[in-house]
Image 1: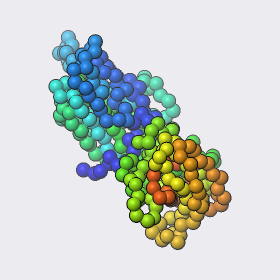
Image 2: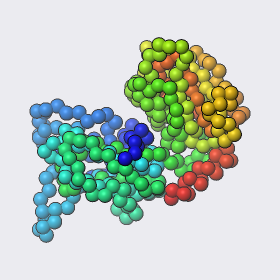
Image 3: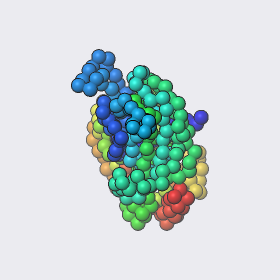
Length: 342
């Protein structure tokens, strides 16, 4: 089984995911499925509907007049549409009320479809009906090489599921990027962190996430560095482009902000990232202030495929934005990938 959990969660609410419909949510709301935090539980917290759970829980099903039991389902609109590499179905704290089986389907629907339009979509099974246990995480590899926008979690026949994680690689629609100034470092546009010196407290991909970080955990933060040198992270841009403006956001980093930062870039089509001399500066070492955004206009005259951010000596970054334009080759790369995953 592959380690797909290191990839972004395409469905999580903090990345724009939404649970748009469910067959039933009598006990607990469907929206809990994509909460970013780990499921919590406090015993003997009884409300009007019974014990409270941090998850999605449906009523007990009974056979209809035809003897059919059916099953419950929930549809999630991915915040970051893309190629799904794996799914985690977490039944944390559901011990006597979990479903014995579950499956997952996915579809690709353009625009902003209604529920009726999604009902008529071409759904593909990405996780077959599989046995699951109570109070456990269940991981499933996905081998379908297609871009998806929605997933449907089937809970067979009923019960409770705490979280659904949908890990994969975001794939941006080139129609929304070509010919425009865009964030070349955005996860939703296809950028990724490919190397990092330290991610003790949180993953560096966090700083490429959409929106603003609500707290320190939603950015990238390193351990305290005790030896000479500095921490760094390498970002593979969404596609080859020219970076013209950088934003280094240290919001929420008050006593653990780096003292300074610098940015270097490389065109990996003509040089190896392992060759330190091939990296060229786009932002010289610059002093930073805690708990705030810093914006810098860059020369923007050289093409790049990767950018390295160096923080001196350590600390964290809430968000990193690298605004610029795609090169003609970069636009062609995005179009080719889009068409290959249709």
